[in-house]
Length: 185
Image 1 (tube, one colour):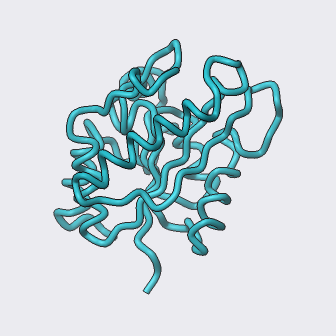
Image 2 (cartoon, rainbow, N blue to C red):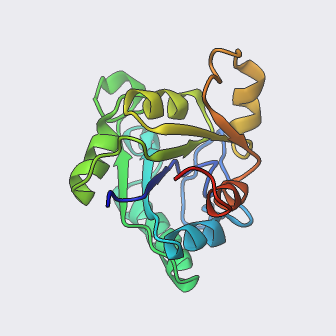
């Protein structure tokens, strides 16, 4: 049986976002219900992966040690709720670096596939921006747009075509409810 994979963007989906970047572990604040949503999905047999652009590293706003501290906090909170994030893929580059891992490029999804030894084809990809929707489509994932983070801003700018086939939910907690209450797997 194939792995039931859910890929999550981080900032704006799991934790509060900021236009000035989340620069420290103290600024990394979970969106209400998001940690519990990850734990519930994990307990229900979903493999959880995180794909996050972290250009603040390339811009010199924080270093890898601070990013590790943020991810350790996130993992600890999820673990404390009896959940598991199986892998975290991040892009430390700036938009000018022309890398293949910065969303909407598919590099982060490819890293997740390699880390988990699986295909992301058909996986859910939950994000709050057009880049998240684009990488989901490029990678053969099912795009989900949350209204948290930049989600409402993304919705306001999007055309009907932009949102074709996109599941729109209020939050990660609402997406977990949707998935766990019998959405197509």
